[in-house]
Length: 85
Image (tube, rainbow, N blue to C red; front, side):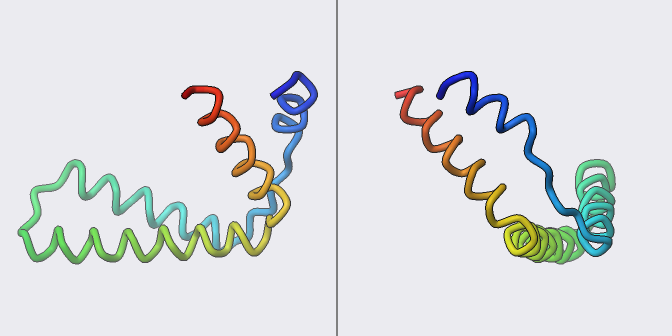
């Protein structure tokens, strides 16, 4: 990856919808609850399941709203993995 690719990476602009913002806040809240609250096994499992569902929902909408940006990031990460080998 050359300097031009890094500059392009820094200049990426993502479309973030209101739904994505709301989902992010909900995910942060759930993550904090999972990390800081004493929960029953049942409650923990339900929250973890809901968190995973939100994560998938966010990723799907991110991909739909930003296909070029996501492709660029994936290419960057895969080239970085190759360099790290």
